[in-house]
Image (tube, rainbow, N blue to C red):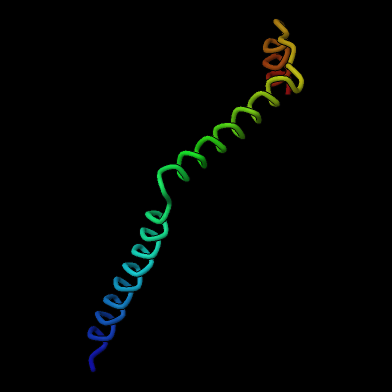
Length: 78
């Protein structure tokens, strides 16, 4: 058997293995009912909004008008 035949067979085996993985993932995805998908999306949305609300109420950073000027001057003084 020539080396290029072995490479071709290995490539074909890789394509088949990738197809198997894709088919399994598709079957798993289609196993959910629309109600289950909707419930998952509502849960994710609730988590995202609660995390965003927590980040907004954590500690607002005070805006300093001269802060940017001070930083730029500090950079040029180095």
